[in-house]
Length: 534
Image (tube, rainbow, N blue to C red):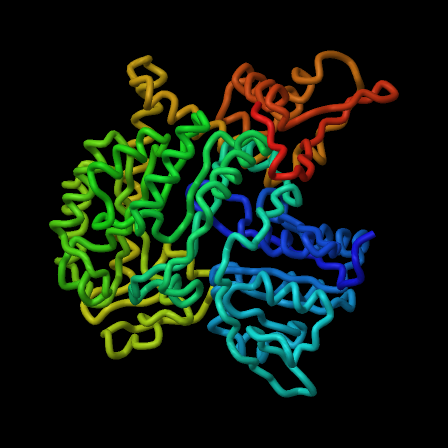
C-alpha cells in the first residue's frame, strides 16, 4: 500500500502531429515524483490509442481517482477541457497544467467551472504538495477557485537541482505502442533557455538560466531508455542542448566510454555549434539536429529577437553537413514584418542551405511576446479557436500578407514534398531507388500501418480468435482485410512487420482454451542502477 495521499490519474490528451508521436515526458516526470513518495498514480495515454469518452469513464470507474489532471498544449486545450469535464462528473478534484494554462489560468477557470485548479510553470513539486494534502493556500504556483473567487498564489521557484528528480515513470505508459510506431524516446539533460524569441514560451516556462543534470545520471537514463524500454533512438529535447560545450563533450564521451551504439537527435541553434563539437556529437551517435532558422530575412530575425544572422545560419548548417549529421532548418512563416518578398526570400534561403527544410506557420500562443504586443508588431490575430493553433494553418496575418496567402504558400510547399515522395514510391516499384530512399519509403509505409492499428485499437478489438494455425499469420490475415492497411502494405510485408514486433517484445499472445489473444506488452519499473544491456 502507498502512503496516504490522493489517488491520481494523469491523462495524455491526443493532439495532431506531423512527424511521430512521442512518449509524454512531462506527465511521466509528474508521475515519478508521486511514485517516489509512495502515492498511487496512473497515466491514461490517449495519444497512441482510440480516443473515446467511454474509455475515460471506464478507467475512472476502475481506478477511482481522487485527483484527475491533464497538461495540454494550446492546440489540444479544448479536448483537454472535455476530458476534465468527464473527470469532474466522477467527483474528482480536477487540475490542468502546461504552457497554455500557465498563461491562461484565470480565463481557463472562468470558462470551465468543472476545472478546479491550474498548475503554473514546472509542476512536479506543486503536484506533490497537492497530492500530499498541503493546504491550497500554502502551495505556490497554482491558481484556483474558492467560494466563487479566483485565487492566484505566488509563482513557484524553479527547481534548482534537477538531479533530485527521479527518472520519468515511463513504465506507466504503453511503451510498446510507441516502439511499434518506431518513435524515438524523449529525455532532457537540462532545462532553461537564455534566449527570448518573441514567438516562444521556453524562457518563460523553464527560465533563462540553464539548469543542468549530472552527466552520468543523463547517460544512466539514456541506457534505461535503450536497454530496458527497448527504444532504438533517443531524442534529447532540451530547448538548446549545445549551449554548454563542455557538458556536451562530457555527455558524448560518457556515451562512447560505455559503448552505447544508438542514434540520438537534438535541438540546437546554428550559432552554438563548432566543427569540433559536431564531430564529437557524430562520434557519439548524433544523427539529426533540428535548427530553428525561422526566416531568410535579417529584418524579420531581428524583430523576432532571434539574435543571429543569415551568415551564421549558413555557416552552422554547412558545418553540420560536413560533419555528416542530417539536419532540418525549421522556418516560421507569418512572423511580424512578413511580406510576399520575405516569404520568397525564406523559400530561396531554405533551398540554398543544402539540408532538409520545412515551414510551420506562426501561432501566437498565450504568454508569448508576439501575442502580447501583436498590435505594436503589426500583427493581426484573427481568432482564438485553439484547435487551429497547430502551426499548420494561419491564425494571424501581417499588414502585408493575408492568412489566405500564407496558407496557400505553405500548402504548395507541402504538396511539393508529397509529390516528391510519390515520385520516390514510383521509382521504388521500378527498382530505381537508392537504398537510403528505399528504406525511408518503407519506414513511412510501416509507420502509417502502425498508426492505423494504434488509433483504431485493432489489437484490442480484433486480436482474439480461434487457435487454428500460426498466430502471426492469423493476425496478419485479420489486419490485412482492413481497407486502410490493404492500400499501403502487401500481405507478406505486413506479416514481416507483425513478426518483427513479436520478436522484439512489442506484441505478444497467449493460447488458452483454443483461443489466441494478442496484446501489447507492458514493461515494468526497474531500478535505474540495475539496467542490463540487451
